[in-house]
Image (spheres, rainbow over the protein chains, first blue to last red):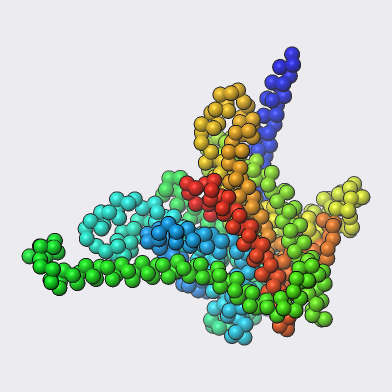
Length: 282
Length: 327
């Protein structure tokens, strides 16, 4: 009798906890659906052509759009990529191809820690080294801040994809008598290009939505895109400003812009992950 | 002829053969030196961050010393600055976030690695990773306009009228405040904790499970007594990684925490975190001391996340030494 009771209790507990685990996973997905659903629903209902064709209007005037901020985001992402890609790729190549165990673990550790530094601190850093000495908010300082966020991500994903290239390919190349650097650039890197591009695109998607490091570097601009040493607008920054503004017209624009941003960021993300998971068969 | 020379049959004085080898070696040395330079640049960036923040925070460090960490005043007019409410807010909101996120994330990790049928694993993982990719400003926008009204009117109203005698649920329901910030943080760290702990659970050898099942354990007993203890350090690492993310999260928290600078035990109270304080005041700050104090705040946050991150990395690395940390 007693054994049967214990057995029953164990079985019920087992079933209950397993169901709860399933519910836990469902809860996370429900949050995703809620956030995505509201953003898409509200965004589409406030979306208009003005958003991508008009500049922003000063306080008090109805209408206007975020053309300059969309343009600004593209410029900032491009600028950050130009700075971060060489650094990240070369560091990744070093980690995978040339580093000894000690230097590799030091740099890898630094990269992981740098990737974990809160983005607002990176913004403060860019402010301290570029905005303060030059006495001007600038697109350049924002690009540098985004690049610092991008570098460790690119380096680590490049390293991991390079490691997946079989050693036999390296040996075959070396056996043909070419030098190591040409082997690296001509054989190993092309062999890992899918993984490297995946890493780069995920990093781009991440920095395209970053806001915190832009607040006191890019600042935002009411006069469109002017130059690298001038303040510049950015889509996430404008969403933040408009969302906290008291004007319902601006709040609606914030939702519409959020729809654009989420389409851009998740679009890159989903496509890249689908393609790469198909290629690696994961 | 030429081939013979390269094979080393030519006399040692042959210039052509040596030139080729030397050229190869120079190219290699230049290239590997270049990659080393960029690798070291990452280390330099990390150290540079610390040094630059320290230098720029120096006016505030010099003026306030250790009292900066214990003072609750934030008065730009009289140039008196203290960090305690911001540090408190950062820790409190992260704690609330983790309390909500950890059970849900561990449950999901167990579900994804142990329970889910094969066809469900991939889409579920995919969706959870998608949540991690949503920009924080959009989560903040959703939090401010959708979640905060909901928190204010059933959640805080109900807690206030039923459990209002606790200091935890005292005061008027604003909606914005520590509770909302904690919930937003929970949403943002759940994907990370889930992904890392899922990898940790997966790394547990199959024999561990089989041994437990062979003893007659139910699946739940197998999971709690064999699988989870085996990957304990990886799970702790996952939680601490989530904590590091929560501590430094800026935009979403800034939008829902209400930006009051107070020490309050009530979860309903608006507050500030270090990151939200820096984000919302940096542009208006004027004067060496004001800016210096904000930068010192950033430095404090940097120090906290640095320590937390290092602990997390060490734990996760030790438990999943087979592969990277699943970034």
